[in-house]
Every structure is written in C-alpha cells, then in structure tokens.
Amino acid sequence: MVIKDYLCAFMGHKKLIRFQAIDTYSNVLQYPENMKGNWKDYFKNDNPVTLELACGKGEYSVGLGRANKDRNYIGVDIKGNRIHAGATIALKEHLGNVAFLRIHIGQITNYFAPGEVDEIWIVFADPFLRKGKAKNRLTHSRFLYAYQQILKVGGRINLKTDSIELYNFTLETIAEQNCTIHENIADIYGKGLASGPLAIQTFYEKMHLAEGRTIYYVAFSLPSTPIDMPERFRNAMENNADLID
Image (tube, rainbow, N blue to C red; front, side, top):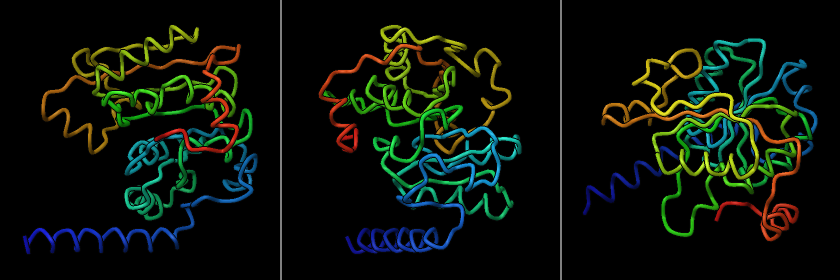
C-alpha cells in the first residue's frame, strides 16, 4: 500500500510539473479568448488548418507538421499533461506550424469560425463502449453537426481506430447523414496501405499492433445540407455546454 501511495504521489507530481510547463509554452493555448477567426494571425500565414481531435500526446499533429510545412496543425485535447509531450517536441524541433489547444472538444465552435478548418483527424479516440455512451463518440451526429460549423465545404474528416465498434458506428452515421466516403480501409496493415499520413503511429497504435489488433481507417466529408441532430443536442451546443458527459 505504501508503494502504491508513493507511485500515485509521484505520478501526480509529474502531472503538476507538466501542467506548469505548458503554462509557459508559446505553442499551447488554454481556453484562449478571441481566437475564433484569428488563427491566421497566430500562425502568421494563411495556410490550411488541420485539427487533431483528442490528440493525446499529439503524435499526428507533430508528424503531419514535420511532413507538411505549408499547412498548420492544431492538436486539441483537454488533458494538459498529455499535450505536454507533443508540445515539447514541437518546440524542440522549431515546428512553428504546430500548436496545441487545451479545451473541451464539445465547445470547439467557440474557437473556430465557419470555414476556418480544412481537415480533421480523429486518431484512436475513446470509442465509449459502455451502454448509453455512444453519444460521446467523436463521430456521433452531434459532433458532426459541430464540425460542420467550422469545416470548409468538402473538408475531410479522417478516423483511424482499432475499435471495430467505433468504425462500424461511424460508417452507419456516415450513411444516415448522407456523407461522402473518400477512403475506407478495413485493415490498413493487412492490405499494406500504411503509407503517407497513415504510416504515423501513435503510442496506442504501437501498443495495439503489438497485440495483433486490426487498424481501421475511413475518410469522409460532410453533406452540403445540415447534419440531422436531435434538438436536445443542438440546444446543448448552442448553450455552450460540453458535449461529452
């Protein structure tokens, strides 16, 4: 019990150090004010903006930022101790096109203007498998409704996951909402298609691959017509409530 208490205290101390560190990082914005519509001023250019939602350690933001200096990348997550990892690497490598935004994803429309985002990546996000939690999946219609408020017309949403449940749920939602599928790969590695952006591996992906899990990918764009979303979810978003509960 003493060892367990010590480990808990040690981990808590490490988290505190990371939170203190990102307070000083120029590439981490925490609940910033007046950023909506002003990201070109932050990056000092008009390059396309890509979001990595529930970015964790930000492996995709960093990896994409290294490969595409003519695009801007923003990792979005609420957990600052995880953001710390990617933000630290981006600073050390002088990746001026990579930033991190610490907010609740359910409030994403408060931080981006209509058409300000060109693309979204959702990589190994929590599939929320417990009963009654499907509404928290980042490809649920209520999130697609939010993304539609900030994505450019035709902007792609990319989902990469090891969860067959989340993958199938996403395909069902795409069909229901009349989205357009651009790519659909049921087994990235089995089909030898892990190249380009799909070759970037997160901490969790490496762990899942070591366990022999199948990795799924689907890229799609939203319809030109409004996403069909139950009124109670629409009201929650318009009242500034976080969508995840």
